[in-house]
Length: 338
Image (tube, rainbow, N blue to C red):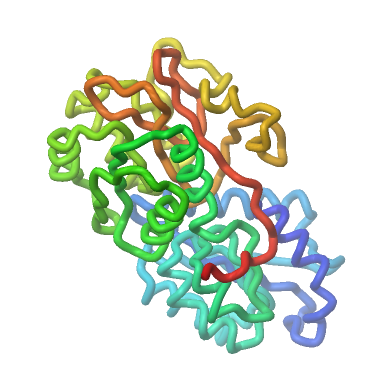
């Protein structure tokens, strides 16, 4: 993703030639999360950007290039301050990064008003495809509600019912839940919004055990997802239903824990081959590196506990394997939802 972004910057670099630094260096401001539990995603984003720069020979559009990194600390107000400093003090030519939708929304106005080209690398709040859309803003990822729309439609087509929804109480969490409900018309067992950055999910897991839904839809990126899945396991729910293996927004922070893991995907993913749900890069299930990005839901096969769908693979062998549906995303902002 970051390689694509930097290549795109190279294509438009000539537009900013008059504004380049005195030493003719292209300066790119990259705002991400580099501290705290959420920093696991930011580290991956920084590593990807560093790798992309190495691959490009530290040049963009034939000119020397450098990346100025800023830590938003998973806080919207800090993210805005960092973005403003990059514009005013560091005088960057382009801005990118932004894992979290609430941080991007807080930072958006000062960057857009400066005239700098802003390329969102991950966060995709629906507002930026509507009333807040601007000619110098581009999304290299998606609109938040696109991926859960696909999951909602799939689960609705499968006649699944009694679904428990969990997401953090911030912009992306609300977009995810709303996107899922837009196409899922079955029964919602509960809709729970947790505190962003929350680490203890004992209350939510107790409620989950009490409600005993048939399916579980989760959007808990980064460290939140790691903690939830660990506590879900520790609560014994793993033993009462399918193994809740997950590769979520933390990208490898928690891998499928099964003695018989395989990389072939799930029944749902395999059944979809050749039926329009493959990713552009091939295969019905793709491991992605995004925010965050990721929705979790369930395949049929309910036993005494809720089925759980995790982030990507590998998947454990068993009676109700895990799956993830993901639609190809466009480099252009999606049209506003009506």
